[in-house]
Length: 218
Image (cartoon, rainbow, N blue to C red; front, top):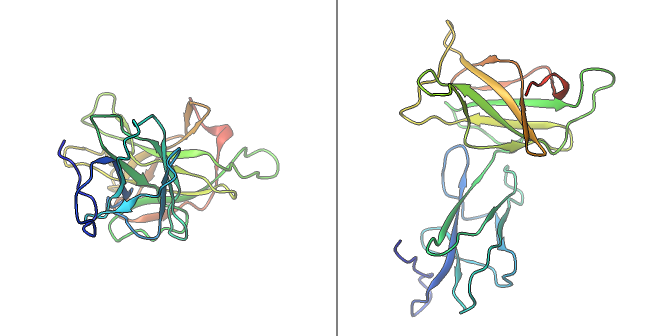
């Protein structure tokens, strides 16, 4: 992999330890402003190069496995952490999932919803649960395919989840043209999922009733 170049204000080039590319998980647009990016065990903050990537320069200390974290600040994203790349790799991409207040662009397929622990008794928000959509791909084996971007419920159990398809994907649709999907939740390494339901393609759907985790299936 070619070496990344340090910021233009440097009169000389220094080796890059590693770099992080922060992108919008829905549009894949690069994000270089409004976020705070840090690496554990490295006191110095990264510099932002001319391409908008966050770069840590080599100070001669061997790279040890650690975490790169992104704090979205006031931007409508969820924070994220990933493991730093190990040599010879020097670049890691961090996709930020949309927060509940994220403004989806026209044409995006997404779901806004609430998640509760159980539909028995008073509703209790299922907070801090990793969630994502799983869609039916008629051309895949197995046919149920996980969306690449995972989100997380807030303290109220609210979250947003989006679908992003590749050209080769063949999402199955019902007679009305809606997508066949399931909502999945991951807790403690175990994934459970809702019953199948349909989601309108190319628009944001606000789910009127909460999903209940006690109804999810293995």
